[in-house]
Length: 244
Image (cartoon, rainbow, N blue to C red; front, side, top):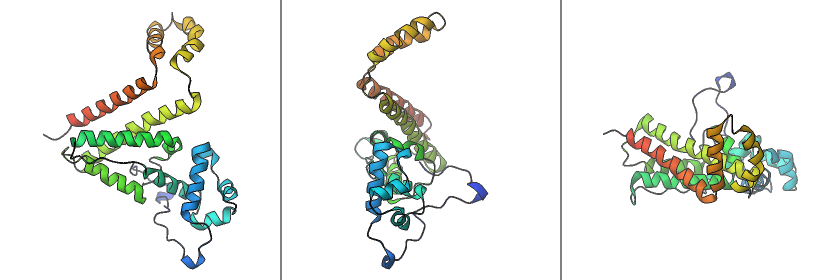
């Protein structure tokens, strides 16, 4: 979730709402930054990234876009604030109780739960450095969660990125599927796909046999087991590369 290597157009890093000087209080309008972020989150959670615009936000706040622009220069800055707000929902266990693996796994599951609540966050990870107060608190605690793993420098950064990339990818796919198909079950899909599977069975016998075996068992418990399996594999990989 940290900044990725590379440069923006012209070699200048993108500006951030967190480093731009805020205006003097004497100029402050009636709306507060928190009120603006609250309204933005309502739009984002209901309609996703495409549902948020400065004009729609101003209308929702009954203030017009001008009042919004007092706090943020553009939509990108607004999204920075919104992403940091929901990062405040993520909790990272300390490594004292169950060691670094349990702590990192706890963080991974909490991050995943947050993404399921706010799937619009997925495309925003990695777009800008996450330097807001909630994100920096989380990242600092993740470093602490790895205490005892013996990782430092780039090795630690690689491990942190690996965990975040796995969670964002897995949770993003899960949330996309849930958003598109709702409560449809594996059996519902098998009834729909039955004729097509019969048509391709001769060309792709292994695939069709696998789908028929697995999809009929697709439940929420299976999805949880699949995530835990992947997370365990990731943690095993980090374990295997720890300095001895």
